[in-house]
Image 1 (tube, one colour):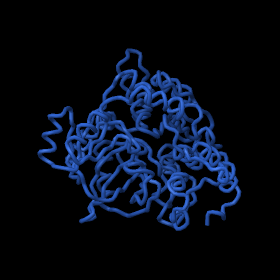
Image 2: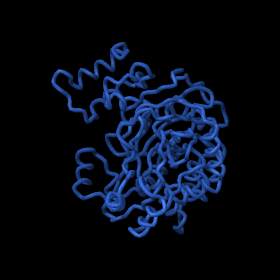
Image 3: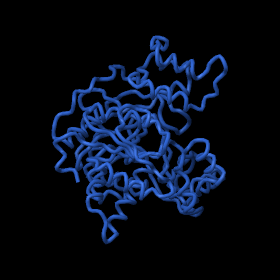
Length: 419
């Protein structure tokens, strides 16, 4: 699938189960790079509001494998770009299903390999502790990590490492599956909370109120998450996203996190940095796992030494995937070039300002944030429909004098009001 099409316009299939604005922005950037953009996603997603999307395929949380299979066979894409962890898990499950079935579709397997990397890397993609072992073997600086299966494991870890400790659930994202604990009672509660599926009431609320179907299937299956303990490192968060092809890094974006949407949550303000050691660690990992596509890496910059510790691997695009910041920092263009063996269209450099405030994340965190003025406020002016949808989808409680319609008019027609 796809080889006869590599020299024409490539089709990117974005796979997403989450309603993130940065996924919509990624679709726009892939379109600007020269590709056709289609998506498999739930109804009402922000990516459906963009002019870049050529076609959308429905995602059914109760039968995700069928949804993904039908979308792939209909779209016949040249590359699948996963935008969240659950989508990556679905792709890995679909790959295993097609491999095991007697009449499995070889072309689907080939496409998933082309989109994610060597199948030898698949067992490590969603297993934090296993991945950290790989990183350690490559000589990469990491915090000590261990799978916690029960309270006895927890006691052994605490007696060895002391407090505070970090507990993380495999397959989680946006900080939802991370807890820092400082007592054994907190640790026990956190372990139980991270292991078990969401309560039925919360699942129903997410479906009805947030139109978030991601937690339905795990609840029905009663699936418990794998929880890992990690040594606490006092430091500042940093994050990287790279485009890679068959184990070679094609381009990368590296940021220090300045502000977060909430504690342990995703960034709302970032500062572009140069970090040879972070870059070296990523090159080693990409080469070891023979990765392809977009992959994210999280680091901690230790307070006392400034040394980077790799703390997490995200086998998917992250919220910076749409940013085009010059030579070697245009990841959609790098993927286009890898697929077509042609130079991508010269993407305009969004800004020379190293500090980037994501829209609407930082504005929602604090509408009076200084970074909206001193940094580059990354508003998609070319997509007024997306701006309107972002503002209407916010959870902000709007006073009468500060209605959503007022802010839509401000963001859509009066850019100078933000300066």
